[in-house]
Image 1 (cartoon, helix red, strand yellow):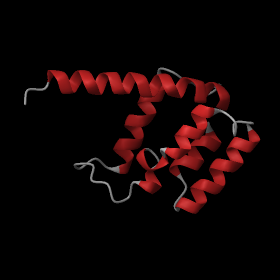
Image 2: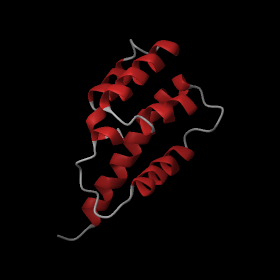
Image 3: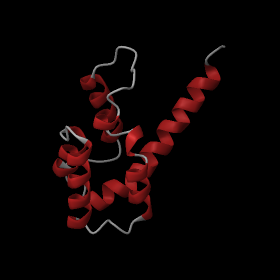
Image 4: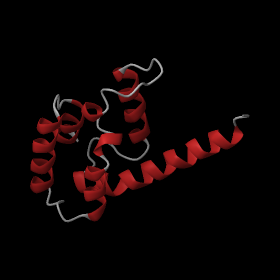
Length: 109
């Protein structure tokens, strides 16, 4: 998790992120995992360094990071392996999508 967080939250350039990402995948033998490949393809939607020009309505980077971290807390813990995290990440995204869809449905136009 430490290496994953460093890759995601401490990569200041796109090139730095990509270098760390591939190194991480090689270390944990995840290059051939289809779900991981789709994460990389969608990196511009979830990796902070790719979202610098996105407006977040007053949310600070810290707020977004804390929100993301709290989302992980119910699925992973300090002893969670990288492979387990990748497997759990799909459930995190699905749950978040479901909550967003429910909120959008309940919100009056």
